Image 1 (cartoon, rainbow, N blue to C red):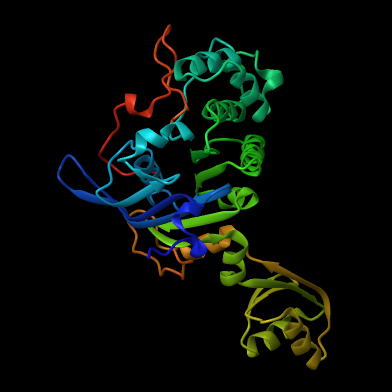
Image 2 (image 1 turned 90 degrees about the horizontal axis):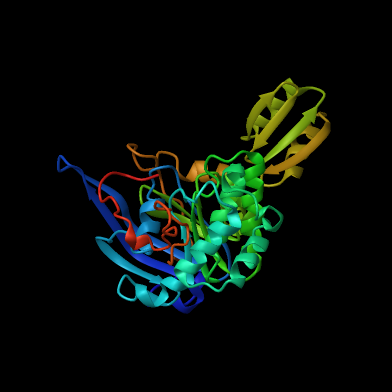
Length: 359
């Protein structure tokens, strides 16, 4: 029996891959392994972060899931359908952004969506609904070229929603956005996940994913390093740092180091790791008549966990030491040809490269 995310059966998963592998060959014949034995489990419903350094295989994996490129080995299952054999049966239930979307700049956002909706057979009423879903109703009449980067990305997400898909796949949706734009996309993803849809979002910006993801898969050099619920991974793997304020930092540092704890000095403040409980620190210091004026436990976040886990996992580096893991579409981001044709909603209409690496 195939082991799955937290013991779930394949029917509980929106996406399941086993042993997924992809190798590219350059013009000179040099082979480069982009994905090697990837096991990816994405539970149904909510937001799932697909995380890894640039060049770790995220985009290649997504393109294989969408049938844009062929896998060399392994199996893929999307919404209960075997990919690529059953892709035509499920692609209408999938919306995805896998590259920079393009819209007509000199017409309104609403008109862009109307053209796309007609091209993919979505009902007219869908346009108003998806603009509302991404918070662009009041700006729907504005020309696309007047939109901020964050608004353009929200419009791209709106395009993926036109046929009300069950699964949404977004590849690095916050790339190039300012903090305001990142916040907009974060809120949109959170809302979509709360609505019952499954959202797979790839990223290397961990602090943003931590705010919205229910579950994550972390990969490095094309293989799974860890996956599970964010809280479970942090509770199991992260080290707690305790910020300690004390009148005699020199004496306190000496006592704590002698007790086997790790201490990083910041002026009169000590950042201490290695204690099973913050109370252990106060007991050690009090025993030497050193009394604490400040004690704050700071658990490492997902970003720190990610950095520790993927150390050495970037392109051209040796693999890091893997930590234990949990047992483990329709493309509506339009690509606009010259008018009067509508932006193409079909990912298979575009030629795709089979050489080189990926982000």
